[in-house]
Image 1 (cartoon, rainbow, N blue to C red):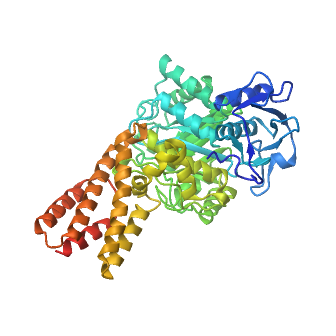
Image 2: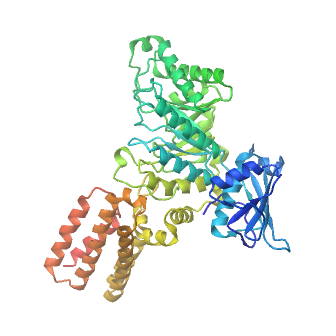
Length: 560
């Protein structure tokens, strides 16, 4: 479900036609037409019973412009009212504070039209977090241009308003940071920047020169600025200077002579880059990923960097850890106190690169305190190399950033799966999808499987073998149906999941063997087969199930 209208949605649902007739002469007529079309809504050329008449009005009022709980002014709010005239049909009125608010209203209406209903006659929406985004900042094969556009469109419709272009393995971003883009690459970048802007998403272009830059070399600095200006000319107004995952000590003797320590070089570089960007265009913005990007927030490096970096520059921070299990308000306040900057969270979820590559982080966002928006500049979630699989967790992140107090991780995850796979597909996918929760956020995989195994073991210990078998056979039937769906569906997400699907098929076979062993406790050959197949399962690297499943098989084997 698109969550952009969740806040303030009360009342009886109203039937809604599939098409919209935009009233001529309203203040936002052209923009509303364009936004509805971008969101896939059908536009009608004339009013009628088969089209909802909608008008848009820009209203600069406190109710729409001021986010009371966050104590900030925003142009992202909207208010939709609906009525059913006696003559029939539906009339809609959108009040919006700025183009972003109109975009979110159009996105909500397009979703409602696809569902054939409006959830209430009086809808208000406004996001709690000021900056809500996602990063392409992982190690591995970067997303393809059409994938980036697809992700931008999907997440923009769900309230995301910033995208950070920072793929580690794009040579122009990191290894060959000094080189200007060739004409074809620059044209693709220009197209992507425009695509994001059409959907009210700020495109942040990030550059990572820290592996080999000579901080004291004016010629290298000039080339860095020339690269940023090339991207500025392509339409970017938001820039990132990434100094993460680089040598901690200065590697060039002339830098040691000029700066003494790395921190001094970083402070100077940040100041000069910010000054160059502001000289090019005062509207330009800069965000910095520091060399030390996680911890308490009061350490020497980050405290001095923050205190000596102009307030106009944002600071990325991943929280207490590189991949933080929790992001707490208390930690954000400490960071702010010592750095004099509110943190902008580079949230390393659902990313699964480096040593995590055998995990598939498909589960919902969790562990982020709901009032965090009062004490940070924003949050951007780092996606996975697995583009399709990134969608579900990123959609749950979008739901959290829009309405953190009303966020329900499990409900958001199920809604994301339904949007991606359809209601029936999501239901059948669920037994497998729940086996892909293991991440920095949680260690428990397959909660429903674990509950069934525990119930079966409890029944068996009580001497009720029949009940234990009934529970296990019901579980096996659900898993078999899921396995059939995984084999039959051609959804692109499943192509990325083959490593984990293979292990899930092994898991299903093991469960059937375990049931046979319980039915024939004296069959030594059957038990040997189960033990051999379990050994193969344990040696398969893909992370699936958890200790509870292995413990269950061990108990079955111990019955022989």
